[in-house]
Length: 330
Image (cartoon, rainbow, N blue to C red; front, side):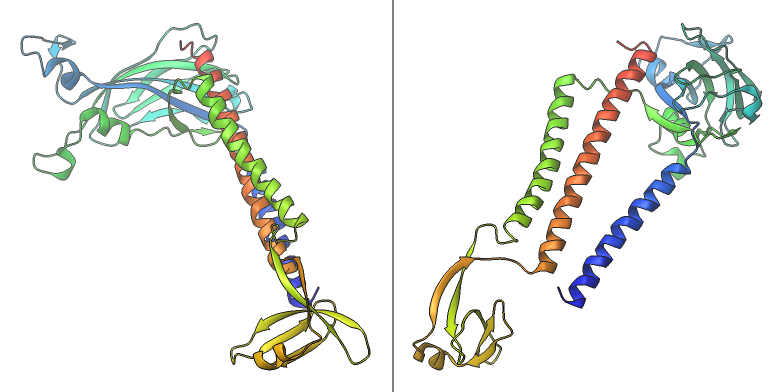
């Protein structure tokens, strides 16, 4: 193996190692605490109920609901690997709206969950949770009624955007809780059937294993994949028989190089075929060491990526099943 090939292989290996170390360090630095907001529904009361039925009236505190009132329903779940205790909370988790919006009402919905939590409006744009002890996998269901800023007539913010969409785009979840990441927003898990999951999982696994297997096959066949090429046996002046292969130079000359020896000759096509001591030999074709290593690494990398994707699909399915069970979804 020459110096260039060695340096190339070393560079690829070093890149893979350093990349793996970087990913490992990034994962280690992640906070163990994590809170996820699962949106159940966001309903514009006027658009969904009142607009299409002229004689129907919906009242809130004895006043008809306006076009900018939105009812938000959702779940807050501790999806991390660490319980959240009161002494970890410097600033509680809040539902935060921008200026011009305001909360009209907010409350925690009673459920079978053991966590004792409350949701209260601190000011017009902020509603805060009080969880007490919030254990891993515990959840809180809440409902909140908001008045959404609709924008000025003719402005870009007032055209084609419903009140519930405006609320979802504007809602934030600030907090200062020790060892806890930013709040993750997600939809309620879809009802992916076991059959759909197992088909997807099996396809990804087969692609991953097939790619790694193809890398092994490439190594075993030395990159030739069963292909054949024509070599020639030539007898040197010393009486030794040398196996050679032929390349064509840019000037049309044939370049005869020894396969396992430093022999190299340049002959014209006429001179080559005029010689009588060239004996043909059909051999298995093989790739260069550098291309073989790079190709094998590529297939292994693809295989590892697909197997990692399979793990992600598996964890995603298990997580969705777990969340649906915890939230009592049928």
